Length: 317
Ligand code: UT7
View 1: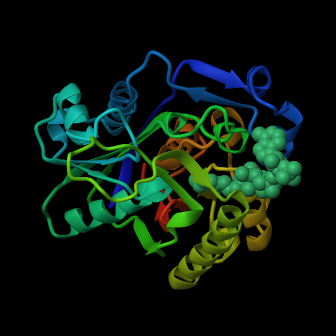
View 2: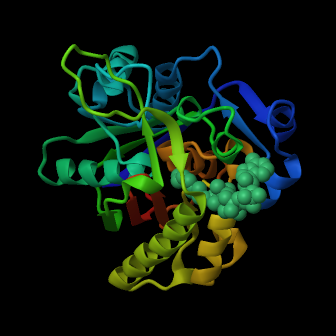
């Protein structure tokens, strides 16, 4: 496969650390020092599907295509207002596409999981042009009374159009069931027959454990991929890493021994927007004129599950 178009969209409501200080026992100093985040955009009047459609339309335009050219849509999403239908069905209708669609949930690693599925579809000739849309609203999973979680997340969407090509050089996905370090359980409808104990609570995260897993696993994935492709760390133009915490990004960079300019970040402006982080950052690089044909890029992300996913691609545009 190759990526031929990118897009992104963020909600209009930007919440600064100072705004959080007004109702939480926190400070700009703590959040900046521990996470690098200065502000995040959160959904107010927008619908998540509308952000997704904005990002998707940008990606289509960037690819020189219309919705009619797309023959499969993969939406990566953890939570949205609908349990059913899948968000991808809603996006399909709003885009005016007619192809089949599917939602996946690999948490923050969803973009690379979607790339892997897309690659398989392209390889077995079941599709020619695939739209990947990552749309996330983690601000609706956290308790806004819990300073340990709500300061970390933002909402947003990122999209990419992929087509047949030889530019995906290597990819690696992992899942290791480790559910207690990061989860969110929401209430289902009661029935007259339920007699089991149920537990519904806003996002629970063991931050330090997640931090360690993130750095260890991301470094492991990237090293394996570099080894597999015969590339060394400095052959890579950019490491597009999950934007959860500036300290996680810096730790991965230090372990890999690569220069700062190879590891772009926007976590300071958007916080952690889950699986939308990678395509949104890629879109920034693309639109900022930072990518040239032939550039080697590494993507690496991790999330609840615990899932990790990484790949090496060559920029094709
Ligand atoms: O997409 C994957 C999702 N998640 C992640 O990638 C998150 C990974 N983890 C992290 O980014 C970091 O572990 C955090 C940013 C969540 C926390 O940073 P930390 O340096 O690991 O801090 P900590 O959890 O060890 O907490 C240190 C202290 C605690 O106080 P005590 O117990 O030492 O008195 C917390 O209560 O900082 C306190 N604290 C806060 N203080 C002010 C936690 N959140 C805040 C806050 N403002 N917002």
